[in-house]
Image (tube, each protein chain N blue to C red):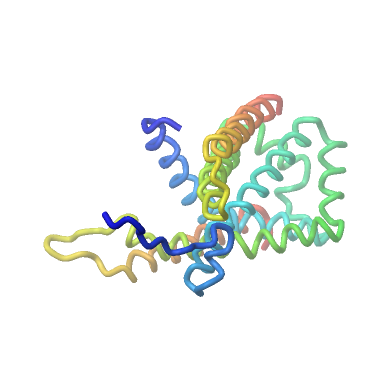
Length: 113
Length: 130
């Protein structure tokens, strides 16, 4: 990775870390409840569809999904280095590619709703 | 430079097993695997939602398999560790200066925890959990 990429990936990492720290526990509790058979009202198809159909809902979902992906991609890159995997260019390219594709996929899915 | 410099052997793949604080560091970093997995899970949920009611409801049904429940529980534990370790680092990442003094770290961490609890309650309330 070129030096000039660092502020961008670091910025996304930090933004993603903050968003996930604040929101993911509550979101996982919601999906865990659904998995346990108690589906919260928001997850009912009509409500979730209406939420994701609204531009504000789209924006919220887009930021949560894409920032989580970029946060995880950057931190996993460093973590793999710490686990003794030294092919950083390959690791970084693969992880950032997944995050980029995931970001594009999120946009496509949201625009289809 | 001496001709035979001393190079301490550090096992590349297992150095973090030596000390508790290395383990906690690795634990904190490994949370990213679960944040990433949950992000992909949300992405799949969006895909199913975009495919219509039948696909989305089949997806919801699929969550309640034992593996699905296990995934949610393990992910929740790791993400809680991410949240607490992230907030505990905030005074180092963004110290707040008031005049000559720095705001005590506990205040910054505490403010994050308070905001987190409040926001979580709001999200859970809006989602219809209680």
